[in-house]
Image (tube, rainbow, N blue to C red; front, side):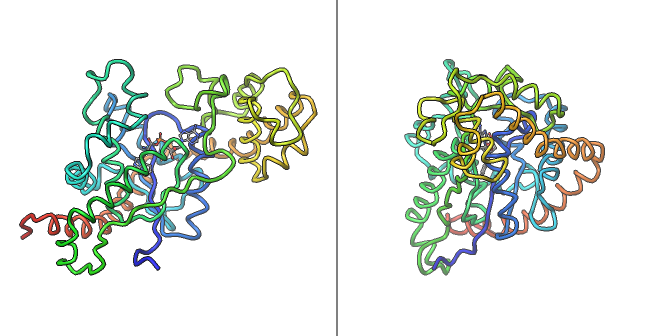
Length: 346
Ligand code: TYM
């Protein structure tokens, strides 16, 4: 039995609209876990500035993403909802963990390679050390479970490596501080589950759905209205074959695989059941059903986001309250870290 209480931590970047990938890959699990776990959900504004953000746009995006969290069903009475920069312990712990993590570990991070592109010398140092800040976000709360999409798996493995190395490097000091088992940090478990842990672009089934794709037709934004959602699904790329009736038939057919996964995740059914219903039929029939389903599920979320965007004062009050509650957890943990590493704490 672990001595650590089960605790969930996860976050999203306030850079543009949330999209279907964020919703199906992470948000659905966030919502469910509120009923079974203590949950902390963060708007990671400090991660956002690893690439240039206009200050006025960033300020608006933080409120917009928080509005989207609430509209999707995160409940500030059940969960802590806050923005990262209002809890300075994240930055402090990231510095200390940056002295634990090894350069070779960061050099392996594929997301940095993708985001930095060809001109690595021009990338910010923050973009490079981003996964260390992410590790601090999580282990600074002794979080045990981290619900994310597939693309965050490597970062989670790094967070586990950093937690374990800290425990080993400082084993004696940790024991001296009263943790007899030598475990100060918990190595967090990734929670990557569901039929859509990697939602692909609607224009190219081999590319991840992402905010940064220049084509808006490639993604469903949570703020899209019903007509836009239906149009994007109608225009979604497919191949010439009808849908297969068995899961094996999706192999080598990325677009069919993606759309079936999206249907399954939105409806709460298994991929097998979706194929049993729509397999061997016309793609257009399936697309119409998918458009109706997506409009029914996402339409109300978009309306609620708009309503909350008109009530900035309320949204900001959620962040203020959440930040205070988050800090009450992180501050004593980071104070212990200062003592363990040998700082003079007065
Ligand atoms: P971000 O903002 O890129 O994405 C937020 C969440 O959405 C998931 N996601 C997807 N899932 C399935 N298919 C997709 N196409 C797709 N696109 C995005 C992501 O996996 C993520 O769960 N580094 C993180 C933010 C972060 C964080 C943390 C997460 C910072 N600190 C601590 C967990 C714990 C990121 O950039 O997510």
